[in-house]
Each structure stands twice: as C-alpha cells, then as structure tokens.
Image (cartoon, rainbow, N blue to C red; front, side):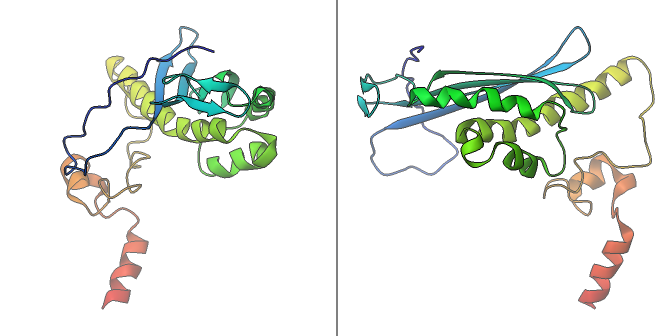
Length: 211
C-alpha cells in the first residue's frame, strides 16, 4: 500500500465563507489523456480516499492519517471511435483483501464503445456484486475525459494537416448537450452561428405549443 501524504486543504475562494470546521476526509480523483505513438489513446484515472485522523479499519487495524482507504487506478486504451481495445486496473489500497477480486471482471468491458448508454453498459456488465463501486464510478467518468482528450486533438491534427472538417454540415457533438451550448444560446450564436436553432422541427413544435 502506498502512503499518500495528507495535503493541506485550501479554501475555495469562489464559494461563500463557511462556518468554522475541521477537515476530515479527502477524495482525490484525477483523469489524464494521452495520444500513443501507435495511434491509439490512453485515458487513465486514479481515485484515492484519505482521512486526516487515525482510521480504525475493521480488517487492517489503525491506519495513520493520510493512508489511503481506497487507492485505485484504471487505464483504458481506445481507438478513434472510443472503442475499448484494452483495459488495465490496479488497486494498491482497499479496505478489504477481497476487493482486489474486482480487477479481473473489468476485462469484460473490452470491445464496448463509450457513447450513449455508457452508464447502462457499465451497470449491465459490472453492476452490483459483479464489480467494485469505485471502479464503476471512475469508469463512468472516464467517458468525459475521453471526449475532452480525443475529438479535440483529432480536430487539431486535421487543422495542422490542412484537412477539412469531416462533416461541416452537422454540429459538433457537444452542441445541445448543456446550457452553455444551447442551440438557441449566445455561445452558439458567437461560435457556430450556422447551427443556431438546430433541430428546427422540434423548435417549431415547442414554439407552436407556447402560442
């Protein structure tokens, strides 16, 4: 088990001041994306849970402050279509020795593709006692890290090579997926004016219902 030194918790300046309090627990989650020399992509995720005080573990006894209760790592290797080509997991820190048995079942995800229904795919293959709660949490959120890593960098490589957009008549996949990228919002008007009011049939039906 590797020891993670307890870090000083800095106040979040954008939040209003809190009442006086004592720091007890830190969960650190990190996602990193890489473009491999063989053309594939690696997305790596780590999760650690630590306490700021001595934690009495039912199986491991007294754990000094800063000792990870959970210390878990996943690497997904993906192709351009976000299909999982390989998966590697490690669990250096777990509350019970039996937890590491959740490593091998993760291999069932090889061949699946990140996209619509990703959460359902995870639950179908790794839900409940078939897998680990924390590995499932990491795996689900690795989807957004993959989207942040792969499509944007592929677009940059196309621009550097002087290649056109693959489908300039369709909006980028992230438009219409959040408030900031609302097809009727100001950000789309500024950056993608050609796609303002996309899905006109749905918009017409909404406007008609409001009349």
